[in-house]
Image (cartoon, rainbow, N blue to C red; front, side, top):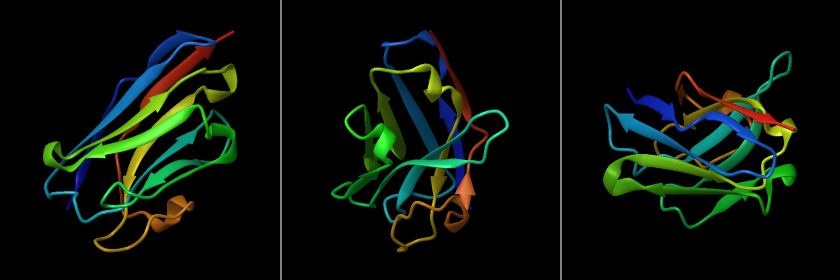
Length: 125
């Protein structure tokens, strides 16, 4: 079992930056592809970014490309999401998710086995 705990959310203004963190426990995540997803009120959970176990390959949703950066530090068992130039449309609950060992990252939240409780990001205009 992998337990994931997100942190770093908050209330910011449009144009600001935030760095989200995801701390994993239970197992080392160095063999897991990881992803960030988000869910705005009244909407379905949507893909934000994913990263391979090695950190070498990253994929982003079109709306986040160039503004967000996903990274990981396997030695610390942590995943990060650097978010820049935030806009009100980025307001959502952000989830860290992990796939099963050895499986590649995907853009579908249903493909991920583990996720945390989420951290709330609110961007005011």
